[in-house]
Length: 275
Image (cartoon, rainbow, N blue to C red; front, side, top):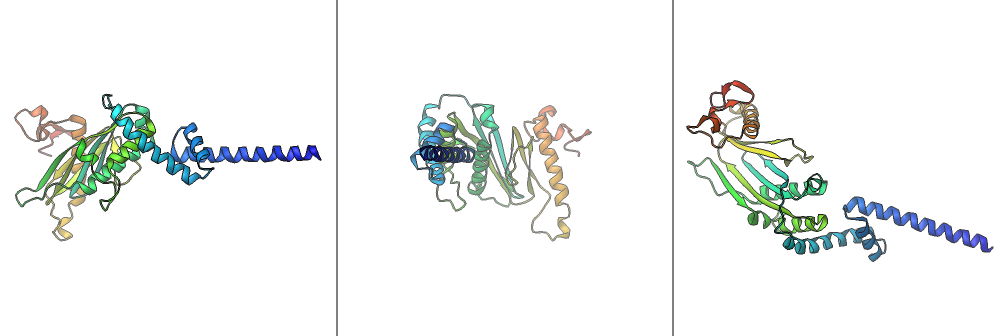
């Protein structure tokens, strides 16, 4: 009788241990936090998975704000450029981190996507006039950090998301610079070199370019807009050319650094301007 009771107790302990490991593994996969931190969270909340994950996120944000101040002097040279483009609006943001390991992480990529999307939704360039067909706003870090991550403009900011991610990875992360563009005539085209994003609305990679292409009027009839796809394709090819050959201006006396005077990447027998 005593032996049967002992075996039953051992079986119960084995079952409890297996269940705890399963919860720990699930929380680790879902949150991405270190194993010991996940174990602490599950112990604190009696194996309540949802409460443990919420606590981990809150703790990461608290730790992140403190950590951000301490890491200000560190260099962050890794990261990605995020790009979101519609026909008449675009946003491009550079998000940096310290290590390539973090740059490859899905959570960091999600942060780049969130920041780029928030910038695209909320930082619209100044109103355009009939004589000013396209407008560009260059953004500094503080402008990007203050943007709301919610579509309605309420709730958390980009800075909150950065702090949470810093708390998770324990290294410097910054939304260092960006720009937004809009146009009243023509379209905006963009291209990212080696796009690694699974998000259809935000592309990201090490290099990106965005370009205003005139010659298309959204008020024209459908028959009058037959060249839209062709214009967009050409614009994306020119963006690839810009990424590859790095012109410093559109048109200037020095042909080697002028976009229109460079041999076109997709047909070197002609210049970009003549193509």
